[in-house]
Structure formats: structure tokens, C-alpha cells
Image (cartoon, rainbow, N blue to C red; front, side):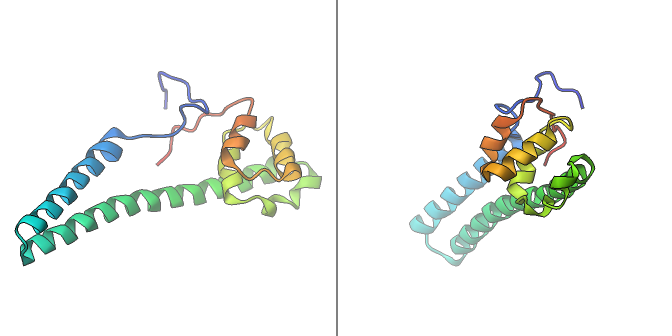
Length: 146
């Protein structure tokens, strides 16, 4: 998928305006309106409306969390396969030591630099994804994300 702006560490986070702003914004307005109605005119209807407003926000939040969790599981599997194919024999037995956060962060590294990056991550016990991403010299874009 071609993009006008090349993906980098600074712009790789994916924001979908209609989901992140419009949907959550509408749900937030609905929640505030439901609270206002419950305070001004308490009734069974206003209680039900408030419960639905809370449920909509939870639904939107968990829909995003579930999609990202599945994406991270697929990335973990992809990275384990890449590491099996690319790591030298002395690191092959250590693939299980990577956390899923380390694997997700290393996915942007090119095949050529992945073995050295993996060695450094294990040697220095680097656990923070942002630090790992900053170590990548040849950024491999991932435009197919949830």
C-alpha cells in the first residue's frame, strides 16, 4: 500500500479520525447528555440512557483493545518466524526470551539488522518498545495495521 509520507518512528502510530475522534466524541457527548438528563429529570428512561451511554463507550474501547491484541499476537508469531529464519545459531534457542512488547517493537527492523538488534535487546535487557524502535536504523514500514 503506497503512502505519500514514508512511515517513520515519529509518525508510525495509526490514528483513524472517524474512529478515534468522531466515534469517541459522539459517545462522550452522549454520555454527558445522559448524565445531564439523569440529574435534571431523574427517571427510569434517563437511567437506561446513561447505562447505554456507558456501554457504548466500553464497547468502542474494547473493540479497539481486542483488535490491537489480535494484531499483537499475529506480530508475535510473524516475528518468531522471522527470528527463526534470521538469527544465528547461538541466538536461536533464546527466541522464547523475547517479550511480546519487544517483538512488536522489533518488527520495524529490516532483515539485515534484525540479528544485531535482537542480540542487543537480549544483552542489555531492553524492555521499552520506544527505546527498541529508536535503535532501528533501516525502518521497515507497516501500513497494514489495525
